[in-house]
Image (cartoon, rainbow, N blue to C red; front, side):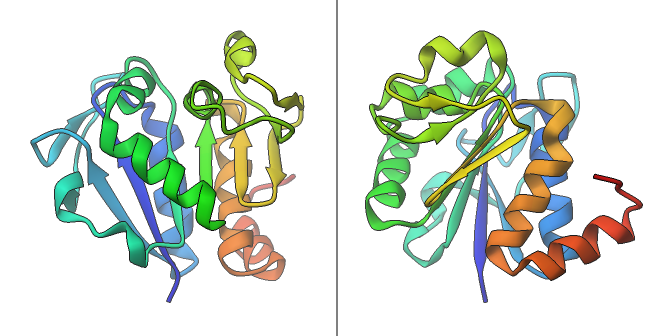
Length: 183
């Protein structure tokens, strides 16, 4: 069974995180919400609090196939400042496991020097932080084991791409149809 960890920091963008969790679960993919704080309750950027399944220190990421980094402020900054998060991102990129980031979160990868020569996208005001990337303007950019997206308005496209790479295009289309999503 494929396993996905969605990393949540205080100030995360709720729609970006929870759309990914919801659509992946609808596709019967195991999804674990992981707090990078010392509390299971994580506070969203717009006052929506989420109780996660695990704390970062409790998770062995070796068994996971994908990590998801939602955007939002100061959520992105909090993810970027967490040494363990940066270590897991580097490990996943190096081992060819999927790293998915949306909105401001791809800037973390740019700051780590992981985007050189890679195609990526992000929230427009963060494009300067994608050091070395070939910047795309489409809702979702998929390059190898890297999946990036532009923001809250592209959250469904992003989540459906995650479903597609964890299963297949048919399952992603099935989920899109079930939620009456017209691409």
